[in-house]
Each structure stands twice: as structure tokens, then as C-alpha cells.
Length: 315
Ligand SMILES: Nc1ncnc2c1ncn2[C@@H]1O[C@H](COP(=O)(O)OP(=O)(O)OP(=O)(O)O)[C@@H](O)[C@H]1O
Ligand SMILES: [Mg+2]
Image (cartoon, rainbow, N blue to C red; front, side):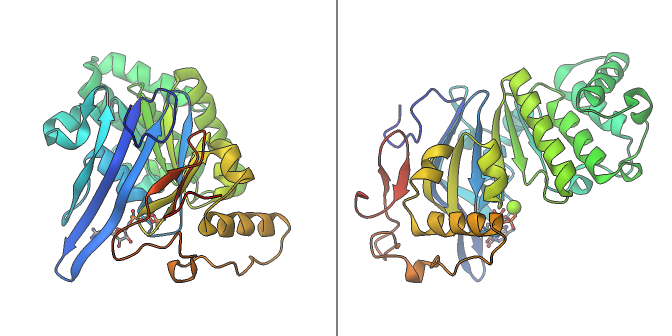
């Protein structure tokens, strides 16, 4: 096991010291900095943080889809004894949508508007599973049924715009599940949906995870949702994970000022009060948490895989 491995149990994916930067004419944007996390079979690891903190770029780094002018500048992404950062686009294409699948925030950007739902799911099955057209159609209907789409057989011929937001999200989950992935990356899978549908989709992801023993990377800006659904949490701020650990430990013993701030917001929301004005910008972080010109604070292990980014071992 790597010295920086965040969790103790065996992992199906282990990311260590990942950094992904954008080399723009205006300068270098450090979208992801020294990120380490692990995904486990049948478990959910959540990546939480405010807009622009680097959650999606982390996901795209795993899939080898970081757009220009961005690139992975450091780190390893181990999956099935291979470092994904060293694979060719061809090798990655065989893994994407097959062993590692992704559900996006907005299904309209991921689903092709000119093809029926059925055709799009069948395409994944033809590409990765080598099924015949007929077999693929039967399997596609089965998948739609599994994700709770009524009249699945008829729905195969529907186009994305003919479905409600919740049904579109279910169809996209069906497409992601088509090849029985070991890892599902869900990037804000419910943000565009109302609260009732949100709960249904999260429940669907959970039941499918149990049945298939998938590892899920759940990306969200909502610590409330994450509290209910994640086994492990990594909190990101400005490209770096500032604290990570199992959900109970993070909620019971938060160490970092940013984590405490986010938790205060959740508690205030539960009590329907305004969020407290807890300090959460690096400028106001205590000396032991703030990045210095010499670099980022190192990750300190405070036991049981609970880690906080600090210059000193937290007390
Ligand atoms: N194509 C790009 N060119 C330059 N910089 C980019 C590009 N895409 C992302 N970035 C930078 O990477 C940072 C992280 O972006 P990312 O999309 O990962 O944020 P996020 O945490 O997913 O935010 P959100 O919650 O809004 O989806 C952004 O702050 C942005 O500055
Ligand atoms: Mg994002």
C-alpha cells in the first residue's frame, strides 16, 4: 500500500498525489492539486466542495478526458494493476463506459438528442459487449426496466426530449450501467431535479450499487446529500482536498476550518437559519492550515484514515 493511501481497506481504484493543471495564456490554473483518494467495491466516496474547486476535473482526469489546455502533471490513478495516467486514448476508450462509467449533472449534454434512448444504450452494448442488435435491444429494455422506467419496451423508441428530467436521468443511469461497470462516477447526478425525484434517483443509485457491488464516486456541492449517501468523504477547496475520512468521523470530529464551516451551513439549513459567518477563506485560515509559498500543507493522518491538510499534527 502506498504511504499516502487514504483508507485502510483494499481499494478498486487508488488515486495518489494527482495534480491536473491548465496551461492558459494567462497563466497556470491548478485545478487539482495533490489529490489522493480511494474507491471501494460496494462503497460510495464523495467529493464535496464549492463551484470551481476541481471536482469535475478530478472525474475527467480519471477518465482521461481533461480538455485542452489542461493535463495531468503528476500522480497515479491505479485501477486493475494499471496506472490510467499512462494509458493511450485507445486503451482508455476501452475502459470508459465499460469498466468505469459516468453519470453527468445534465443528461441533455450527455444524451444525443437525435437518437432514441434505446439506440444510445444499444450502441454502448454493441461497442463494448459485442452483442447482436437483437440481443442489445432486449438488454436495453431490461436496463430501462431495472432503473424504474415504466413501459420500458415502448420507451426504447423515445427521444431524450420526450422524457421528463427524472426519466432522462434514469435513462442515463441505465446507459452507464449497461456494461456492469466496477466504478460509477456520478457528477452532481441530481442537482437539476426537484427534491422528491432527487431522493428517488439517489435511492436508485444505492440499490444498483448493492446489486452490482459497484464503487461510486459521488460528486456534489451538497454536504447534506453526501451525509446520507457516502461512506467516505473528501472535502475540496481550491483544487486540494483539505480533509477526508469516513463520513461518521468527518461529521463527528471535523478538523479543518473549511469543513467546520460547511457543517455549520448544513446545521443552520436544518434549523432553517442563515448560514453562520464562519471563516472559510485561506486568508482567514489558521497558520497551521494555510498553504505557504513553500507549498501545500501535507496530509496528516489522525487515525482510521481520517486525514487533514495541516502543517502540524492536529490535536
Ligand atoms: N477548459 C478549462 N480551461 C481552463 N481552466 C479550466 C477549464 N476547465 C476547468 N478549469 C478550471 O478548473 C477549475 C476546476 O473546475 P471544475 O470544473 O473541476 O470545478 P467543479 O468543482 O466541478 O465546479 P462545479 O461545482 O461548478 O461543477 C475551475 O476553477 C477552472 O478554473
Ligand atoms: Mg463540476
